Length: 277
Length: 290
Image (cartoon, rainbow over all chains, first blue to last red):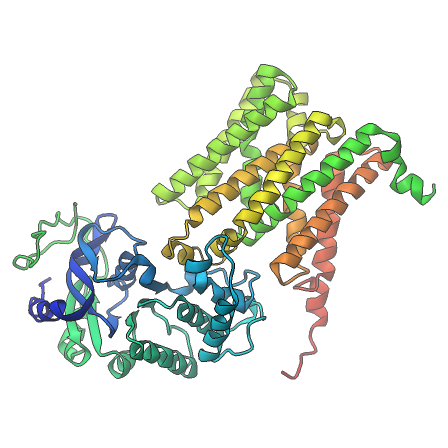
């Protein structure tokens, strides 16, 4: 397991320009086993970045750590000019109770949570924005329908409408197009392109390389460690992809404790898999 | 017998029947909405678990202070809160999911309760705690029931949006810093409070019935939450009233009569419910054009 240093040097340049999020030697673990291992680099502000890598590469875990749903084991996530309230996060759908008796409009209006909260009034402006958001994702007139009558594609459109309402500067998407048809995917990619024009930062976990090449200028190729990070064309090379897909799938139960230097830049490559911090 | 004799005379004639009726209707006000949220949050069995969990508290109070409603309610409340807190803590700090931690704690609690009662009480006491006697509801008990119903309705009004969002998409609320855990925890306290309120009238086991059966029935009729709440409430109120009448005329125990009446409403809903009832499903073969 070796560590790629070249991306680190190229990224120090962009870090000084316009980073939205900086990762400083970030390590995330489950049961002390690292899932994201010593990652440093920056997500560029106002840019679309794809996170690509095999299953179990730590992509979702990294997003959770950025949102604050997961504790960092070591290292740090640093935000440049971003408050927690500037972040919108769309997880994979597992946790949502899609049979809950909620109307589509109410589901979209959750995006207004920051101003309405537990008790606040949902004002007319928010309702109009919700209607506009529904139109933008191609669901005009669906407001009064219950969410349990929607198809998977329509439901994902609703969640995108909710993101639109959140009006966040940083948008994190975890596999947003899984199990969606081409038309829905194309429409939602259109929404993401709109976010870029509006100067928002988008980070999306994706699996479709062609999609990434076509729509996402920046890519982070992750396989527990950072394989490559930078302009998509330079990252998604056959060599890099082969290295990412060669990632060991299982934990080494007898792995030694990781003693890699805590301070960036990391020390020389070495073999290890278990963390104690 | 004329309709007056069937439907009203028992209450006009006997004060204990009036107390029982007011008690049941009051209980229904809190239990129906609580039960609906339990159903929607897929926590139907948590209500059942909690009803067992409050048993040792009530048993200890009974052994120490005799058949005192106040003591038993406080005891049950303490036991219930301990289980809620412990299960919540375990869920948040260990690998175990909420259902597993609730199951573990309520079983330990229930076993302690049964042990205590069989060592220092009698089987009659255990039956009383488990199945209650709605006909022994006195003025003090009514005050307690009314207080619990008031607290429940007001608290649900306050928690409503947070609970809905927490039920629909807990991760979203968490990522927004919405403190959904507080809503969840407050809700569990309301569950305990209503079960404790219910056990004098219906017994710890039967109180859950007044929560779950109207709620499960309502889910089969309405497609929006406010309508579901209204239907669950109506079913709970009607079950309380009709169950008491059946118990009176048939000389049957009141708790089971009330719960079986609610059970009837449930079976009717299963058959005729407009949202996923069986008959609708069987008849619904002719499909529409679009």
